Picture (cartoon, rainbow, N blue to C red):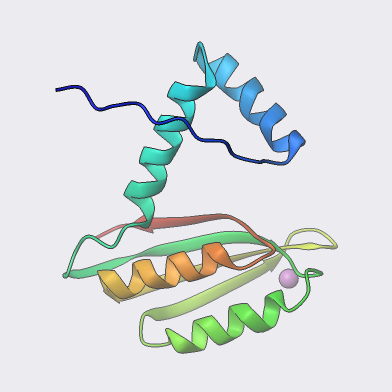
Length: 133
Ligand code: NI
């Protein structure tokens, strides 16, 4: 039996929608619904805790250090997860932007929890989790 379609309304920044629409047109999508369904599936795959095993990988993200309390929140969260973080690299990319890369190892569920927490901090953009092992 086919899954029923649910309609819902979302509010997004106009510029983000413009960028999304340009990209999905370039990729050959005929409408937003299929592209958004693919994006939601990717989000679920990346964010859900699904393994009780160990994992090794990296978490990388860009952030604007001018956003209020962003550095404080990042440091507090990293200390909360100090047993999962093996090393941290920080690079000042522009006057405002920083990139950090964390090498992580430990319980996969804890690593995903750290990844989710970092992604949710205001000012953090394009947070990526890459599981290597
Ligand atoms: Ni910096």
